[in-house]
Length: 146
Image (cartoon, rainbow, N blue to C red):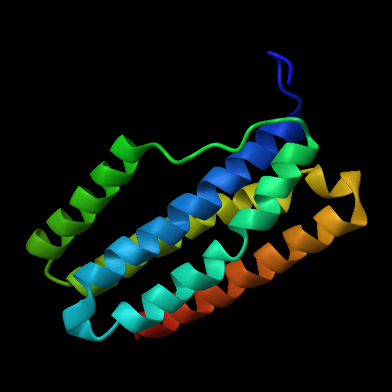
Protein backbone atom coordinates (compact mmCIF):
# COMPACT_ATOMS: atom_id res chain seq x y z
CA UNK A 1 0.00 0.00 0.00
CA UNK A 2 1.59 3.25 -1.10
CA UNK A 3 0.69 6.78 -0.18
CA UNK A 4 -0.33 7.63 -3.74
CA UNK A 5 -3.21 5.56 -5.10
CA UNK A 6 -3.65 4.55 -8.70
CA UNK A 7 -6.95 5.24 -10.44
CA UNK A 8 -7.85 1.55 -10.09
CA UNK A 9 -7.14 1.55 -6.37
CA UNK A 10 -9.17 4.72 -5.86
CA UNK A 11 -12.04 3.38 -7.98
CA UNK A 12 -12.13 0.04 -6.15
CA UNK A 13 -12.27 1.79 -2.77
CA UNK A 14 -14.95 4.22 -3.93
CA UNK A 15 -17.09 1.47 -5.49
CA UNK A 16 -16.89 -0.57 -2.29
CA UNK A 17 -17.80 2.47 -0.20
CA UNK A 18 -20.75 3.37 -2.44
CA UNK A 19 -22.02 -0.23 -2.53
CA UNK A 20 -22.13 -0.17 1.26
CA UNK A 21 -23.64 3.31 1.42
CA UNK A 22 -26.42 2.54 -1.05
CA UNK A 23 -27.29 -0.72 0.72
CA UNK A 24 -27.39 1.09 4.07
CA UNK A 25 -29.44 3.90 2.54
CA UNK A 26 -32.03 1.46 1.18
CA UNK A 27 -32.37 -0.09 4.63
CA UNK A 28 -32.79 3.31 6.29
CA UNK A 29 -35.39 4.43 3.76
CA UNK A 30 -37.22 1.10 4.08
CA UNK A 31 -37.85 1.95 7.72
CA UNK A 32 -39.23 5.36 6.75
CA UNK A 33 -41.50 3.96 4.05
CA UNK A 34 -42.88 1.02 6.04
CA UNK A 35 -46.31 2.66 6.12
CA UNK A 36 -46.32 2.80 2.32
CA UNK A 37 -45.60 -0.95 2.19
CA UNK A 38 -42.27 -0.32 0.47
CA UNK A 39 -40.10 -1.61 3.29
CA UNK A 40 -39.88 -5.17 1.99
CA UNK A 41 -38.97 -4.11 -1.54
CA UNK A 42 -36.32 -1.65 -0.36
CA UNK A 43 -34.93 -4.21 2.07
CA UNK A 44 -34.66 -6.70 -0.81
CA UNK A 45 -32.78 -4.11 -2.86
CA UNK A 46 -30.43 -3.56 0.09
CA UNK A 47 -29.86 -7.31 0.44
CA UNK A 48 -29.08 -7.66 -3.27
CA UNK A 49 -26.66 -4.74 -3.11
CA UNK A 50 -24.96 -6.16 -0.01
CA UNK A 51 -24.09 -9.28 -1.99
CA UNK A 52 -21.46 -7.15 -3.78
CA UNK A 53 -19.64 -6.09 -0.61
CA UNK A 54 -17.53 -9.20 -0.13
CA UNK A 55 -16.46 -9.52 -3.80
CA UNK A 56 -15.41 -5.87 -3.92
CA UNK A 57 -13.56 -6.23 -0.62
CA UNK A 58 -11.54 -8.95 -2.35
CA UNK A 59 -10.83 -6.65 -5.30
CA UNK A 60 -9.63 -3.93 -2.93
CA UNK A 61 -7.37 -6.41 -1.15
CA UNK A 62 -6.02 -7.68 -4.48
CA UNK A 63 -4.86 -4.13 -5.11
CA UNK A 64 -3.09 -4.09 -1.73
CA UNK A 65 -5.52 -1.64 -0.19
CA UNK A 66 -7.57 -1.89 2.97
CA UNK A 67 -11.38 -1.93 2.64
CA UNK A 68 -13.05 1.25 3.84
CA UNK A 69 -16.23 1.75 5.80
CA UNK A 70 -18.77 4.44 5.01
CA UNK A 71 -18.57 7.62 7.04
CA UNK A 72 -21.07 7.20 9.92
CA UNK A 73 -21.62 10.96 10.12
CA UNK A 74 -22.50 11.10 6.43
CA UNK A 75 -24.90 8.19 6.81
CA UNK A 76 -26.54 9.85 9.81
CA UNK A 77 -27.00 13.05 7.81
CA UNK A 78 -28.56 11.06 4.95
CA UNK A 79 -30.92 9.37 7.38
CA UNK A 80 -31.90 12.71 8.90
CA UNK A 81 -32.36 14.10 5.40
CA UNK A 82 -34.74 11.24 4.63
CA UNK A 83 -36.72 11.90 7.79
CA UNK A 84 -36.93 15.62 7.00
CA UNK A 85 -38.06 14.81 3.49
CA UNK A 86 -40.74 12.56 4.92
CA UNK A 87 -41.93 15.29 7.27
CA UNK A 88 -41.91 18.27 4.93
CA UNK A 89 -42.49 16.90 1.45
CA UNK A 90 -45.97 16.88 -0.01
CA UNK A 91 -45.05 13.61 -1.74
CA UNK A 92 -42.56 12.02 0.67
CA UNK A 93 -42.69 8.61 -0.96
CA UNK A 94 -41.57 9.82 -4.39
CA UNK A 95 -39.09 12.29 -2.91
CA UNK A 96 -37.40 9.51 -0.94
CA UNK A 97 -37.41 7.18 -3.94
CA UNK A 98 -35.81 9.99 -5.97
CA UNK A 99 -33.06 10.20 -3.34
CA UNK A 100 -32.51 6.44 -3.67
CA UNK A 101 -32.20 6.85 -7.44
CA UNK A 102 -29.75 9.70 -6.93
CA UNK A 103 -27.56 7.55 -4.65
CA UNK A 104 -27.54 4.76 -7.24
CA UNK A 105 -26.72 7.20 -10.03
CA UNK A 106 -23.40 8.11 -8.37
CA UNK A 107 -22.42 4.46 -8.17
CA UNK A 108 -23.63 3.66 -11.69
CA UNK A 109 -21.62 6.56 -13.09
CA UNK A 110 -18.46 5.31 -11.41
CA UNK A 111 -19.03 1.71 -12.55
CA UNK A 112 -19.60 2.92 -16.11
CA UNK A 113 -16.39 4.99 -16.25
CA UNK A 114 -13.89 2.91 -14.28
CA UNK A 115 -11.01 1.14 -16.00
CA UNK A 116 -10.88 -1.40 -13.17
CA UNK A 117 -12.27 -4.13 -15.43
CA UNK A 118 -9.12 -4.01 -17.54
CA UNK A 119 -7.25 -5.77 -14.71
CA UNK A 120 -9.02 -9.11 -15.18
CA UNK A 121 -12.03 -10.78 -16.72
CA UNK A 122 -13.31 -11.66 -13.24
CA UNK A 123 -13.33 -8.02 -12.17
CA UNK A 124 -15.05 -7.00 -15.41
CA UNK A 125 -17.69 -9.67 -14.82
CA UNK A 126 -18.22 -8.36 -11.29
CA UNK A 127 -18.58 -4.81 -12.61
CA UNK A 128 -21.06 -6.03 -15.23
CA UNK A 129 -23.10 -7.80 -12.54
CA UNK A 130 -23.13 -4.65 -10.43
CA UNK A 131 -24.20 -2.59 -13.46
CA UNK A 132 -27.06 -5.08 -14.04
CA UNK A 133 -28.04 -4.79 -10.37
CA UNK A 134 -28.05 -0.99 -10.65
CA UNK A 135 -30.25 -1.14 -13.78
CA UNK A 136 -32.66 -3.53 -12.06
CA UNK A 137 -32.78 -1.30 -8.96
CA UNK A 138 -33.48 1.73 -11.13
CA UNK A 139 -36.37 -0.03 -12.84
CA UNK A 140 -37.78 -1.18 -9.49
CA UNK A 141 -37.52 2.28 -7.94
CA UNK A 142 -39.12 3.93 -10.96
CA UNK A 143 -41.95 1.40 -10.92
CA UNK A 144 -42.54 2.11 -7.21
CA UNK A 145 -42.93 5.80 -8.02
CA UNK A 146 -45.85 5.19 -10.37
